[in-house]
Length: 212
Image (cartoon, rainbow, N blue to C red):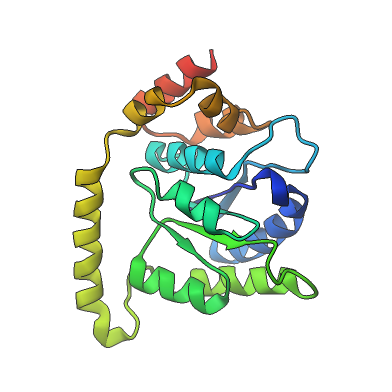
């Protein structure tokens, strides 16, 4: 599994702490982590939580990432932004229990964490425990276990509703402000990671044209 870490500007200073907690768990699981930044609050490429959604959608729909870890001050804005795009199911995760139940019941591919709420002493440990419980079991296993079948059935229904509700991602991106989209893809290591990892050639060509 390839996990993408994305930070927006208000919580960029925590990137190193988040990355360390995520990398520790990912290494134990044999996963790869790509850190797309922001890396510091002073980065030249400044991401808003709306741009987190654009970047996450590009990464997930292109196959450059299998899962996205993001967030903002409350986690709500990032969650809403990510869920505005096709191919993304993002949960709001504040505790290890949230992480476990989201993975088992909702079987999504992204989480938004509230990095400014309750992030005091032990905040790094809470992040580590969130990531441990998130990937403690294969996704979609159901919770409680006897609810597995109806929960999986509901997930398929939701997937069908979302498929009917969204246009293809390139069409959506073309209808947005080009500078907003370029800004979302302007991170220091975006091109390096994206063009190495992405599998969807149409999206790769779209991004290549967009970035010039």
